[in-house]
Length: 151
Image 1: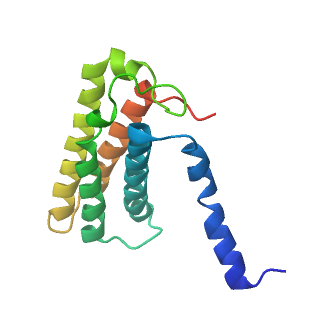
Image 2: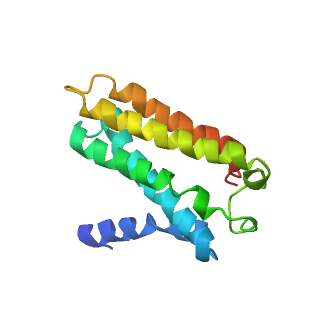
Image 3: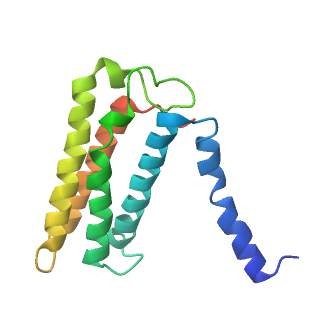
């Protein structure tokens, strides 16, 4: 029987299994972009936990996470050079056939993240959740068109 600390460690390690499997076989720029998306996902979790009331709202921490999304959104187009589709990539061919739309979606995420930062910096941050929804929508828009569904 596992002790409580051992069980906690085991559960923590299990949390990384899906991530490891999702990136299995990924190398080079494909792995770089998967890692970047994971960074964005973690930043979204930080803000999302606050939006759901699961952790206390902290405008500075939320702004830091939004800054990470803004910073990484600028890198997205460079991480999708032509010819980097196919397994293990989750990118649809539309990334390259609709390049202007794809890069426009990345710019939309950058703008939404910047708007969220500004909302978080406002006294009392009254509209931050509205702006956070804008970030969520920007992610969904791009994923709907340019990312293969999880199986």
